[in-house]
Image 1 (tube, rainbow, N blue to C red):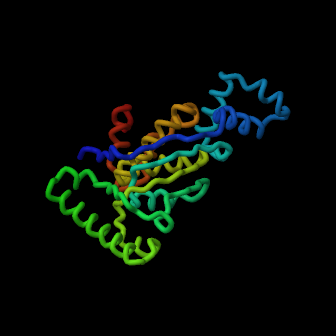
Image 2: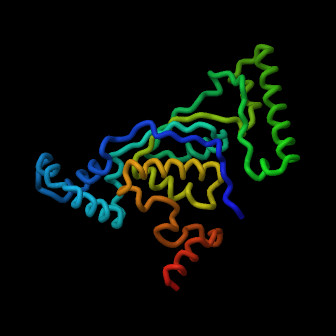
Image 3: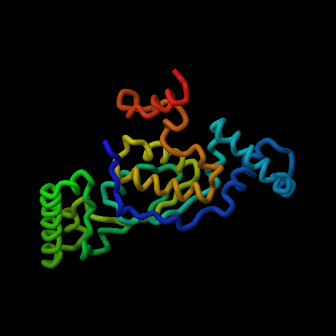
Length: 237
C-alpha cells in the first residue's frame, strides 16, 4: 500500500542549541576526563568529536543528548495529530493555539488521503465538518462562550503548535513516529522534523528514525516486515 502523504503539514525549525554536536561531545567527554573545561574544548578536534559521538550512540548513552534542544513551529496539522504529539511528555514542551481563547472563524480541515482520493467520501467528510462548525458558530453568535461551543469542533480542524524537544526525546519520538505503523499525518510531520535536525546535527541523528533502522522491529506480529527485508538484503538470515 502506498504511504499516505499529508502535503499540508508544515514544519519549521525555529531554533536549536548552538553547536549541538559539540555540546553533546563535551558533556560526554567530561564524564571520563580529568581535564578542565578549557582543556576539554581545546582537545576536542572535529575528528575526535566524530569518533566520540559515534561511540556515544553505539553504546546507547543518550543521556548526554538531553543537554541540547530543538524548537519547531508546526502548522497544517489536525487536532488528531496534536493529541498524539503531546503524549510525548519527557523532555518535551508544547504551546498550542487555544480553542478556549481563540474563536475559530475561518476553518481549515485536514482530510485523510484515503478519503481525499474518493470524491464521494470527501464530500461527505467535509459536509459533516462544516455542519459541526456551523453549529459552533451559531452557538457563539447566540452568546455561548467559545470555550463551551468548542465541544462541537471536529478533530479534523487544522491547528498550530510550537514544540521543543531535547535530543534524547527526539530520538525516541523518531523511533516511534517515523515507523510505517504510525498514523500517516504524524509520520509525515516526524519525517520533516528529522530532515531538519539532520541538517543541523548530522552526527547526532545519523541513526535516528524507525527502530528497524537499527535492529529488529519491536512491533512483533504487527511489523510491516521492512526490517526482515533489510536483513535479507544485507545477507543476514
